[in-house]
Image 1 (cartoon, rainbow, N blue to C red):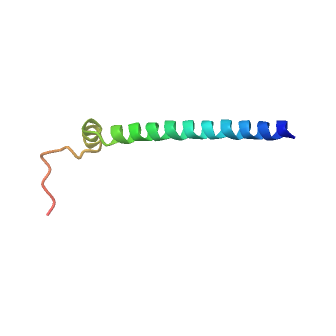
Image 2: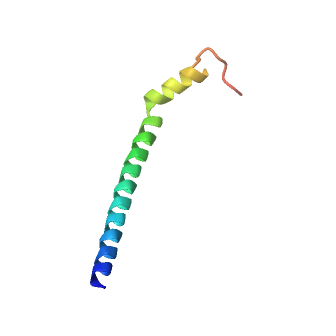
Image 3: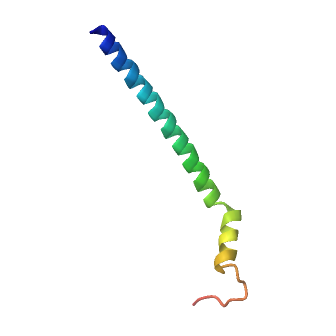
Length: 61
């Protein structure tokens, strides 16, 4: 019976380690994506692409 308990604890520990590693990788990847999507260079690129950087357009009242 001790072998089954030991196997269960080892399996649960591996699951928790994988879960924590994947959560950390997901958080790092998410932070990287957010930092790049909110950067000035990306905002300028998006403004040029969608026409928002046109300085000759009149301002809205």
